[in-house]
Length: 200
Length: 243
Image (cartoon, rainbow over all chains, first blue to last red; front, side, top):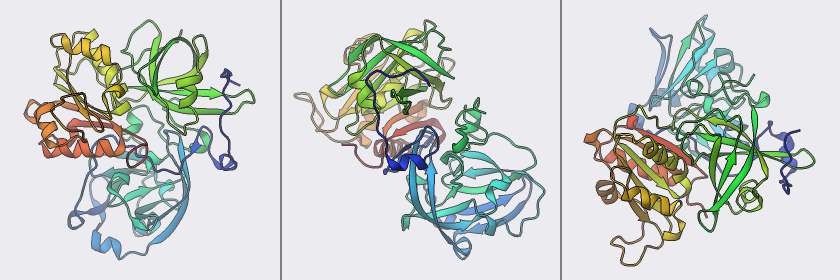
């Protein structure tokens, strides 16, 4: 046990039991972004899967919205220590988007409008673990929360769920994205508390 | 790695915010704009961790200052802003963050825009630039509810009286000083035009405050011609005004 804080009792609730280590529960939806919020008109929005050289798949908003969607109810965990339980989203599964993509790549870099990037193992984007979400709580996703559409990978810290996502580049070797180059963990599992570069 | 700091001084900035000075013997040093995680632990082992920006300039003597605003329903901030006493020990982890930082190698003009307690990491930049006599011209646009909500009031006044330290524009959202030329209100295009560097000087802008404040300020900067890549942000709290 660490240093005891004289006179500190803290708050505990039943829901804390469902939280990863070091997280606290919030009912708000705080925002973490490194720069201005991009606003992309729907007629210019696109989502591209490429291998760094060639475009493998590409959707505009209209063709993207013709894909089957799913309602997703998940807990989300931000590295700044808040967690929100039972959030409700609508989006297209990455399994759908990657279905016809033949690749031997093992990693992916998610790319956003506004030039944000974040890296993930490709297997973390498959098997009903990741979506491109465009609705939150039954409403269009607000720009400050990543609308038009964001990546949603709820089993990792939320910075991996790139806001304003515009595509995914498949890679043979892992490479750090934006926050991963600035002191944050390369993988980011909240249950292992992989917050910072030096965490195991 | 958690380090243990000892509280060596406490100073009330406003009715609700307090600066905590800590001696951290093995402090590795920090960059202006970074934050730390603070961990409180109850006698039964329960612990709570929150992030706080560092207010002090980088230094080598192991002293770290945090300024903590007490949130009405907070779990950690009321303890730090009220209960904590000189001589108490506090666990810290960090420094953390490599993006919302200002480094002395940067020579372009600096535009700082603070909403409320968003001043804290910007104060570290102001102090560091003043301490190193940096040549980057520096302006601060500081939006607060009312005059008595200003943090670091005396020190900011002294710095703005010095030549070439920082030029400050205050904006009040609820109540102004007597005979203040501008009625209370949030930052608008006129204030951006008169109180910040024009885009053609190529400043780097640092905007910190509640989410709605940051959204508004960054949109105004972009409308005034600033490139998105020149604007760095740090947001706290939920959508909408904090009570």
